[in-house]
Amino acid sequence: EPEVTQTPSHQVTQMGQEVILRCVPISNHLYFYWYRQILGQKVEFLVSFYNNEISEKSEIFDDQFSVERPDGSNFTLKIRSTKLEDSAMYFCASRRSSQSTDTQYFGPGTRLTVL
Amino acid sequence: GNSVTQMEGPVTLSEEAFLTINCTYTATGYPSLFWYVQYPGEGLQLLLKATKADDKGSNKGFEATYRKETTSFHLEKGSVQVSDSAVYFCALSDKGGGADGLTFGKGTHLIIQP
Image (cartoon, rainbow over all chains, first blue to last red; front, side, top):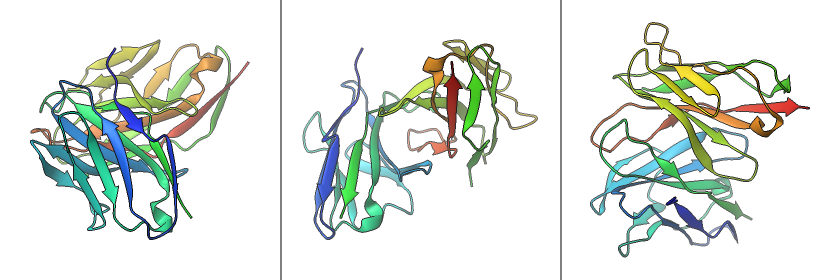
């Protein structure tokens, strides 16, 4: 069964450094998402992406964040200058169609630790 | 705005007990409703969903019915197993056109003791 994959599984970085989190969505999916989950808290929507542009973003997704689909398979989240409070699990998700009834499939997550 | 409220955990039950995890929502439109499960050390997996009022989603013995009149989507299972121990998230999707991030509840940690 096709699945969303994410790399790395765990990323440790120093405050102020840039990180890039990578995702490979399911191949025939067209809509892509990033979420984050701070330890012990709920999963929060960051951004959605379709047709090579951002469709929607939350207030969390400020100027330090950016997303890109650099080729036909990868979908990346870049955090330009990491802060301690960026430490969280970051989940990528993808969906095949625009139907709101269609399921978002999640990857296993990347745990980001900012020191 | 949209929001999802779940019962706080952890919920601790004995094996074969009946499970209910409450979930209520507020939404501006007519949402689709989901339950996701997160097993220890893993990502989120869709457990079940319902897309319109009175729909019942079911999977692996779990059920939830979309109740528009009470804005609820409670998760139930008749007889839980140790392997059901996980964190359960209720979520909604409230926009068409693909530009809809899911709104999640805080999650309910379920612990099943043998």
